[in-house]
Image 1: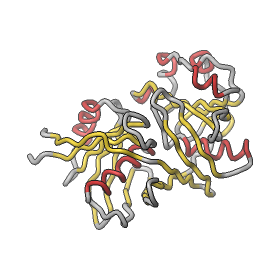
Image 2: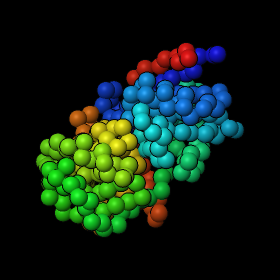
Image 3: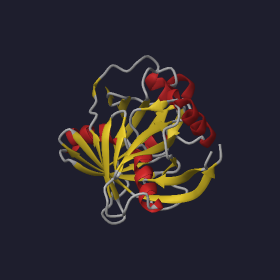
Image 4: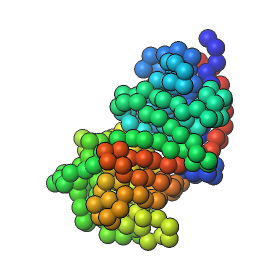
Length: 265
């Protein structure tokens, strides 16, 4: 069997060893889900992306955490587009279209920033499930629930940065993950967040593009505007530009390749 191209890309950052790392596999033909899941376990990153050509500038794209396949992933889509352009799989002036379980996504590259268009996933007010606040160690100002996640607003950026959740308790929640956010006090940013998804095999995701599809409509209601510069304040950290456009969230981020390899099995 021919070797498979494997690229590791740090997404939502212009510096290596920051942002959110994703592995990108460029396949010549589809592979079975069990094989992709095992590759994702081997890579042990928050997501591994698998791309299969299906036409001119068109690809099938699937995302796997070490534990499960997911329906929506921003940083691994950003990493995939970056890998396609950098490898020459498509021209730098071309727009890739990727077909996913949650619809068709496109990417553009004006300058050093990559732009993605994702569906907005606004939250609705919700009652916090038993033990959620205790697992986070916070007093929520707001509890909401989107299609994928719980959204928790707390008072200050300092509290967001200081979070030390009980991942065992969070793991029992019947959702993809938990977003915790506050207004930013760091200059140049509108809001900050962190994202915890132990039930999906990721205790803390370093930078979560899809979480900003929920955060954008939430902060649009709070701040009375639709364009934001956001910072995910995980230990690695990363910056996301996001603009709410009706029922869509337009995400912007940078990416840098860390290594390229060949998968031999």
